Structures are given as structure tokens and as C-alpha cells.
Length: 484
Image (cartoon, rainbow, N blue to C red):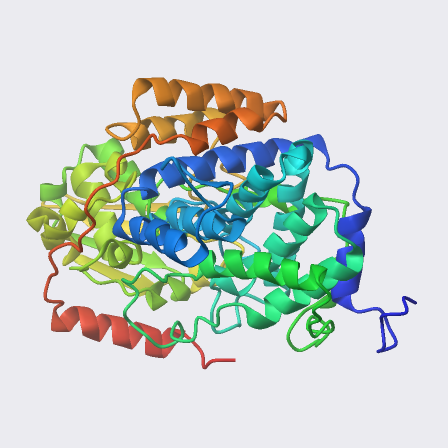
């Protein structure tokens, strides 16, 4: 028993930290997936850079954290590790294009990857350890979230757990002790953003979203505090009614959670993707135009009804969390219109008209598949026929994966009108080097000013209809349980 332990048995936080510190190598399959996850998060950041929320985060990072050696991606500016990580995490998650994990019901990459890359800007001597550090961060973050029981907790927001993955990843990268990493996990878990309004507010169209940037900076702060001797409630994971022990520690090192990462072809909540896939399949098979659709029914799992589901969202975030609106955008403008969603669609009369024809309901069989799956069934009625398509595994799931070519195609669509040909070519070369474990070329691309700043202003707001409020309120009161 270590002298610093005072409570008898070794805690779960200590066991996790011992695993992290005892890991010398990560299997090739895990590092390959890590490289793909980095490519995808950078692609999401290209899409998110121009949003008002990402611009605000860059400006705030300069004011709050000041100058440093860590790159604020694509801006040519730098800040401290925490400032750059906060800014880049906000950028990566702003358009809801960042990766996720089914077991965690959330998004580890937008936190862990920016934190590790920002740390490397300050400590380049650890570059060869980058991919393994990120894989370890995913491992710890996903296990902690999954151990909570994501089908029963009040909220699955990523900010509640991704900071602990940040602490594990950066702690291992910088070769901190197991004690320091265990304490950092305890501190980060205790002080994570509470997401207090999530279980009851219907105002999903705000920039806070899942609290990922705050958790990212908080995980880094927790690690520095632990490094200086600050302690946390080291037994925070040991309450059996809150965390399942087997999920946390069983099989550590035998398989790697990052290999279960999913990637997103559309810039909206993952819970909407199966419905979009089904809709697009019907349109392709039967040559159905948006104007042909008289009604559109989406049958899915209950938690999808806890989204705001506004038919006339006022913000991009509101659109990202609306089944009717996101489905309508895809029907009217095609899948590329969701790479990423644009503010102009918020005022698109054809999209709004179709969104108002979308009805979302719960199907018991599909609901029983959540959270292991996020399925949907779409039924389109036209003047000529009623057509149905079911999708159990949307594109991007590990069992229906997006390959390297798919993510490169995602980058091509996202980069159009944003990155010039030279920068796009250098980014692709950097990704090729990344596959071989070399991360410095990517850091060089990210550090340059490649994307323009603009004057950020909120889009023209719609007056949300009474029907929108009624649907939203009915959904979140009936589906989301009380705060735990």
C-alpha cells in the first residue's frame, strides 16, 4: 500500500492511474484509429472555425489566458496550453461534427485531442508519445462515462467526464506519477462543469452545449494542481450506485475503447443520423424530391425526443438538436448541406415548411436498442405512395464505418470555400505523415493562419412557434428523468 493512501483498499482512481502509468505501448490498431480521430477532429475544426462561438472562444482565450506557445488552430495566434485547448475544443465541437463513442454517449475527441496537441506545442520532446497518449485519454474518459450507466443518468453531456480523459492523457504524456494522475482524475471529476440546466432547459440553441471546452481546460488545471500536491476525493469512483466497477477496470489493456469510436458524416446530433440516412436512401431509391413529400414520420428511441426538435430554430445549435429541421435540410439540399449546417438555412422557407411536416415518435423496439444503437425508421408519404426505410446502424458506426477515404471526402466538402488549395494539400500530406506516427507536420499546418477572421454576429432570429415550445416541453418533461 502506498504511504499516501489513508483509506484502506486501493481506490478505482488509483487502479486506473496505475494502468495509465504502466502502459508502455498501445497496439497498432488503436494508434491507427487515433490518427483517424485526429484527422476527423481537425476536419470538424475547419468547419467550426467561422462560427460565432469559435470566434468568441478565440478572443476570450487571448483575454483570459494570454499569450503562450500553444497554437490556436488556423489563426496564426498562440495562447497558453489551457487557452489554446479551450479555444480549439470550442472550435472542434461547435458544428457537432466531432467524433463520439456509443458506450460513453458523448464526444471524447474534441477535448482530448486539442489538449494533447496544445501540450506538445509547449513540450515538443514528447511528440513520439502523442498517439498513445490520446488513446489512453479515450480509454479512461469512455470507461468513466460508460460506468455511469448512460441509459439511466439524467444527462449524458460530455463535459461531465471528458476532462478526466484529458488529465489521464496529458499526465501520461508528461510522465507524471500515478499518484498525480489519480489525484487529477479525482479533481477533474469533482469540479467538472455541472451542466446544471441540461435536464430541464429547452434552450438547447446556445453555445455552452455539452461543456466540452470547460472540461478540457478544467482537466488541464486539475493535472497541474495535482502535480503541485493538490488533492481531490480519491474515492470518487468507488460508489457502486454511481459507477460500475467492472466497466471501469475490467479488461484494461485487453482491448481499446478508441477502436469503438464513431465518426459523423452530418453536422447534427448523432441521434438524428439514422433518420437522415433512411430519408436519403428513400430519396435515392425512388427519386423523391423534397417538394414531393406530403408528410414525413420518424420513429426512433425515446431519448431523441428529449432534443429541442424545433421546426424553426433560431441558432445553429438549435438546428443541430432538431430532428425535424436537420432531416428537412437533408431532404431539401442534400447531405453536403450538413457539412456543416449554415446559418442561411435557418431562414430557408422550403426547409421550414418541410420541417413542420415532420412527426417524431417513439417505437418500442427501436427504443430497446438504445444506447447500444441509435436507430430510426422513416416513413415518407407522397401523392403516389408511402415509402418506409429503417436504419439500425447509421454511417460512421464501427460496424458501418467511415474509412480514411470517407473522412477525406468529408474534409473536401468542409474545406470548399474555406481552405485554399495549398493549405489543403499540406494538410493532406500532414495526415499521411500522421498515419506513420509523425505529428509535427500537422502541428505546423495548424499553427499557420489559414482561415480568415470575420465579424461575428448572431443570425436573424425567428419567433419560435407555440408548437415548437409545446413539442419541446412535452418531450423533455416526459423523457428526461429527474436530476441525479
